[in-house]
Each structure stands twice: as structure tokens, then as C-alpha cells.
Length: 223
Ligand code: C5P
Image (cartoon, rainbow, N blue to C red; front, top):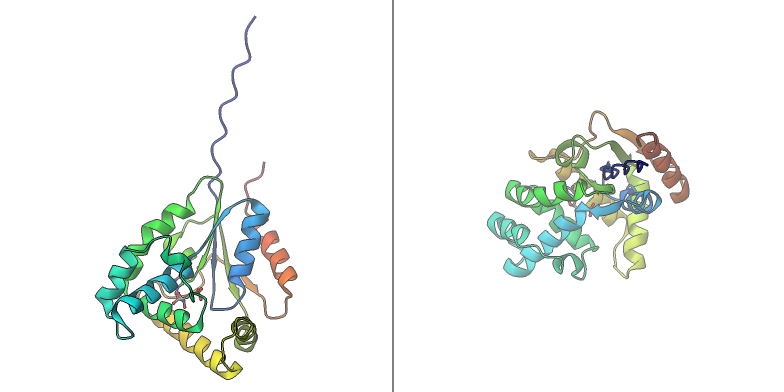
């Protein structure tokens, strides 16, 4: 009698979803929903830059320089990612400043790339995931929405948390941050040539998520 040969262990799934786009386009919400739907891990890469900016500010004050920021990025800990106020407008502004510093981006690169190849699949959202961090990602989405829609969403989020800020201030901040993110020399915010475009301007959250799920499902390997 011969025993059936043991089936070879299935290779772990490695599947990266890269989600890029400007501030408040809905990337974070969509990324979390995709991770839940497909059982993938999720990394909000903006949080790394927010934590770096706030850590540099805390250590060296408003006028922190490039080496303060690079040191903050290199010494980032899990605890820094849980610091208070990382979702504030001030943290977004500090993030966008440190994000233009090459030594900061270099310090955060390997962590993001390793995360993206975790067995079981990963979703990363940011500005340069499909272009620089994971150019070979299996699925790339560029999520966008018009300026007024994004500002309205961010305004509701910030005032909901008690920030005293007007719609016009939020709109100005978003536009300034997008311009800086798109114009920097290293890893500027832009859609990868092979990214699928998802404009959420006229979509409810549920509709945007459904569309993203459909786009990613279309890239999954057939069973
Ligand atoms: O996505 P979020 O608004 O949290 O990002 C904050 C800032 O971090 C962005 O404005 C951008 O300057 C920077 N960022 C980046 N690259 C990423 C993610 C965020 O430069 N992959």
C-alpha cells in the first residue's frame, strides 16, 4: 500500500495593493476596507511621516532642520506612531515638510518595502507607493477627488475632533501640501503609469469601497 504523497505546502500569498493620491481623497478609508475584505495587513505610510515630523518638532522645535528630521525618522518607534495629535492639521504640515527630505525618505524605505511583502498580502496607502516603494505591486490604485470635496471631508474630520479651523483654511492647507508633495524632487506624489484611477468626488464611501474592491479583485490571481 502506498500512502498518497503529502501535498506540498501552499506558497504564502504575496500580494501588494499600492494606494496613492492627494490628501483627504479617501485613501485611508478605502485601504482599511480593502485590508479587511481581503484579509491583508494595512500600513498608513502617511503616519510614518506625521510621526517623524512631530518627533522632530518635539526634539528641536518649529525650526527643526534636515538632520533633526533624519534622526527622528531613523529612531522612529511603534510608540511614536501612537503619539497624540498625529491626525491634526499641524502634524500634516510637519509631515509634508519632512517628507521632502531625502534622508527621511531613505530611512523609512526598507520598513515600508518589508511590510509590503509580508506573507498574506498587504495594502499600503501614501503618495509614492506605486511609483517608488512598490513599483511591482500587483494592484495599484490612484485615488483622487476634486479640491472642494476633499477639503469638505477634511474640514468635517478636523472640526469633529474639536479643531477650530475654517473650510477656507483647510482648502488652502490641502492645496499647499499637495503642491509641495507633487513638486518635490524625490518621490513626488503622482500616479504610476499602470495605476487604475479612482475618482471619489461623486461617490459615497460605500460606493468608493465597492469600486476599489472590484478593481483589486480583478488583479488577484485566479484560484
Ligand atoms: O496621508 P497623510 O495626509 O497622512 O500624509 C501626510 C504627509 O506625508 C503627506 O502630505 C506627504 O507629504 C507625506 N507622505 C509622503 N509619502 C507617503 C505618505 C505620506 O510623502 N508615502
